[in-house]
Image (cartoon, rainbow, N blue to C red; front, side):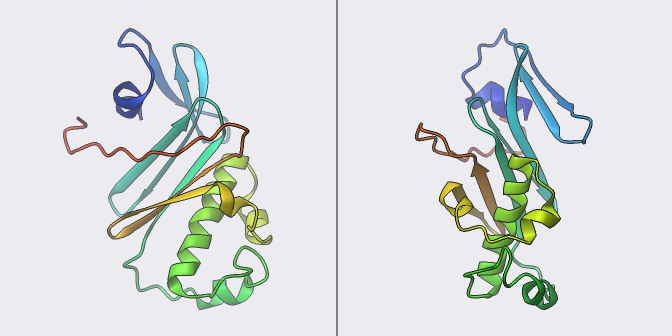
Length: 158
């Protein structure tokens, strides 16, 4: 996270970037003493981090190559977060990553998020395909047009 902020953020080299944890265990990013919204996710050796100085943000990452059967989850939540979905594996993961990302951004319980349709939240989600992973970034809506950009660090964090 620190390398991303230093490389792509509007920070000067002299600014201090600190990553800590809140009481709930969520990441807390501070840049030169100012709190910045951030989110971290990981799966199968892949780590992703996101930050925003203006809006709450949440991200989730899932491995699409999994062979797990999600039929019970699909059946249970077809009127919840999966409402309006074709219930395909692809749709499931788009909805699941959005639910996780929204829960992180809003601070809501994931179980509560899963119980409700996500129609309005879809407008504020951006998806990235990083084979074999699907990454969803959700940023709270604002009057500004805040696009979400993807930056990857190589193995040397450069």
